[in-house]
Amino acid sequence: MKGTKLIKYASASIAAFFAFTVAAPAKSPAMAAIDGLQKGTWTLKQRGSADNRREVCLGDVIKLTQIQHGNANCTRYIIENAPNKLRLSYKCGNLGHGVTEIRRESSGLIQIYSQGIANGAPFSISLEGRRTGPC
Image 1 (cartoon, rainbow, N blue to C red):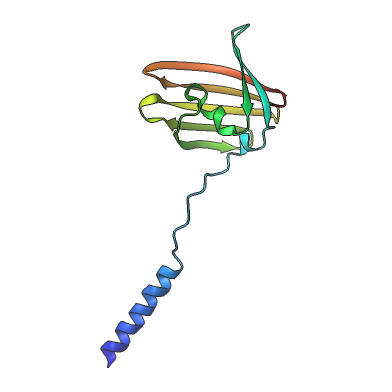
Image 2 (tube, rainbow, N blue to C red):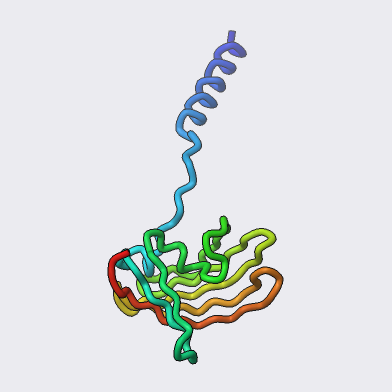
């Protein structure tokens, strides 16, 4: 009789434990430095180059973290996450990897420093990003 009560008690305890440990989908952590950036067209100008500019229609701010890898599906690891500075590393499988630092000066002005490997070749890039209008 005592053994039956012990088994029932243990079963109830285990059931209660698992009832409160339901798996939830992983949520991407907030990236304070870029989450508040204005959506729209951003002009990215490479430092030290007069004419090397590119425009990005910014809907998803994550594009700024992997400039040399475009829309590749990459995994990210946040190294530093402050209100005005984000530093992360990312891996894009066979396409390469990188480390990017974004310094936010305002909601319409950022500095981007990124280096890594893209398509088998090393890269190092320094950009200034300014919001220049709607998409």
